[in-house]
Length: 564
Image (tube, rainbow, N blue to C red; front, top):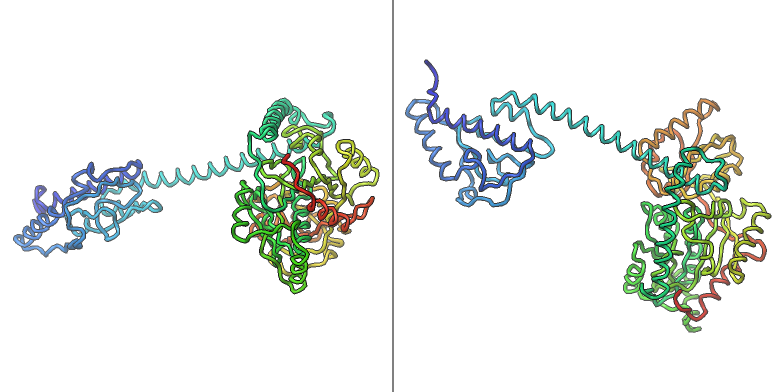
């Protein structure tokens, strides 16, 4: 028979190379890790064997009158008898060939086509190359099937994730409706089925809250004290009470008097509130710290910038600060710390406690989390130095008097102020520096999209701007928009466009914009406006902006109280 003998060195070496490729492929597919010391001899050969096999192959080809085989000489750093002791991952480069980058320097001798380099990477298996080099075309079928299975598995995982996200959103919505339902008769059977579980969880939460409060009260847990005055802005219920706008208002008050405030936030919900504060307070001496351990964050800033006790500042120092303000200069030293959402942050001692109350939703069904919206019982108002009724402009005077009476029954000496959010202008997503007047919403079909604690005040503000029609889509607080949410919004916009025969616009809050500005651009060609508002103190029942500033000044001058 013609051709090369089956027992020739060249045929044996080629067969050994093909087997090495096939074995290495199977090892990679099964995701095993192989140690170099335990590897198959066909996969790892000493460099001395390389040189001997090279001489044998060249000698055989020369004696038979064949052309010389093209064999590459390994670099100097490859010619070593040492073997790597680290295990070779199944998703690393193939150990059957050397290409100058592989972590395994040995290469299999043999024919020219078997000496090619074909690294197996974790992102690309190179099945066609393996099948071509090894001569085993059967590799293509299982690999193609594996890829199809991987795509289907990923798609199935994405579908499951969407279902879970949809279910969680439904549960959050149901819990929110239960929390603000004053009577159970309006609840659906699904909502009522959740009541036993929510009630049990609420009881456990109350026990844990009482235990934690007692540990601080009896000094088992330490209350840390900062060398500067601390103002806490918080609430008794979950979001939508105007805490962050009040923090911004207080920070600006101190900045205008030459005092550098430090705002501390826990950065919850993706940092949307922190991003909004950074935008609004840009150009002021305000510093913003983010972290769960606010005492540690505050000490870091105090070490970096220093501090000044505004209550012990001499007359000459006050004159110096006033001159710096007149010259548009500010002291870098921190003069006051403002805590955002810190009513329940008992580990840090504060000189002033301000509690925000949503005048529209108030305290819901007066139950603790998660059965109701309350973080603490209403008796916690006794710790407050001031209570601010927010969104007072959207509530009737009779309701405001009832709220005021309820607060005074709990603590007679507390100061009560009234605030509102005053819309100033709009800007379009993508053009943040171009201010658009509020009249742009006149006679416009408007879709209000929000993921805030209380969407009702936001929608009422848009309705007061004389829009042609106002619709709404509400998500849970701090909800991060996904592609599925964008499709829901698009579907609603197309529905409104067909109903009113005009292109509707989307209006969102600054908090929603700062959470993820980029994803909102996917609503193009529909226009997306961002409503910008500032907090203002309402002149009502002796409550004015000047009286609020005087309240801050007078209370910070008082001697420090014992930690509560």
